[in-house]
Image (tube, rainbow over the protein chains, first blue to last red):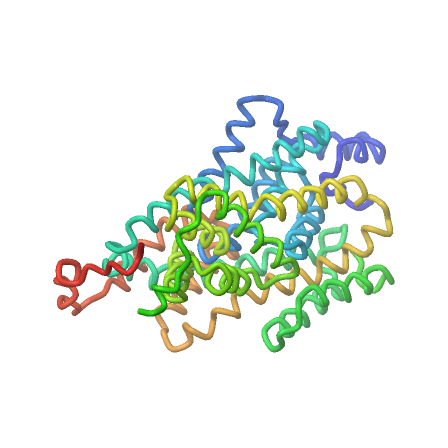
Length: 222
Length: 201
């Protein structure tokens, strides 16, 4: 039997008692109803905010770590789904944080889920917004400061390294089968889309739609 | 400076909200920053193109999503912190609420086998987009071996050693900043006293 990917507890229990207890002991979904938990979760997002370099995508692997591995709100493949959803929807893709919040509160019902969705997005945006406000107000002094120049030049290569690591992480997350192995058709589609993204100006929505059809036909599976 | 004379009067809070909402709604399907330039500079004439491009520079430099930082810049330029919050609400509220609706739909339906099959495909395409992000900015560092080394070390720490992002950045950023600290530009020191750039309102 394939090891249960820490899915919903009910589903796990239905499969086998042993798998259930293993899944639970490994990773128990953190409930947001507990105020201490809620505070910790909010703190995690607040403290990540200032590390969203290069437009915010640098945080994707950290979001995966928090929501799948640390707090166990969602599964690996759910994370990949939410990432795709955030990319396809209008607005900045960093809005994935709201979807993760939604997933975190889903067990507590849709009302809670929406509340935690809006809360998570607020938490991730608040610190960076405040810094941005201060930066705008003092830009006249900052513009020619050596700190500004060193920050801009130094953080660029770091962002580059992070983005490659994030790309690889998302690839591994998205193109994996239920058993945790890489799905070959999935990887091929990802690589082709990557090249097309770099070489053409076709809207990525077309790639997603086309790949969605391939998935529906059963050519890409997981 | 005829540009500045043709500017509209600075927007109030309500106008800021409506303008940013207009940007958000126009940008359905992408191209947010092109739309915000069109609306803020060309249609509403709140700022000059130069001011707008300065804003983009600041927005890209500081942490946070670029488009959202841009809204903060526009709001702050006219109405300070209050303006920033209003502009932010304008640009976020509709797309984010729509995304939340999509999310509710997703969590209600994703266990249906048909939906899951389609998503398996969509997700593979999205992963390709994620993979392209690094390659997109790789070109500008091609001639700087130190930058490539730094990027490789950061990549190895994250993807190879599975270290967390925050400590990796906290260690690598000061080193990188020290290396890239502007040297031999002592001439820049009188700049702050001599050229008070008062281009911004």
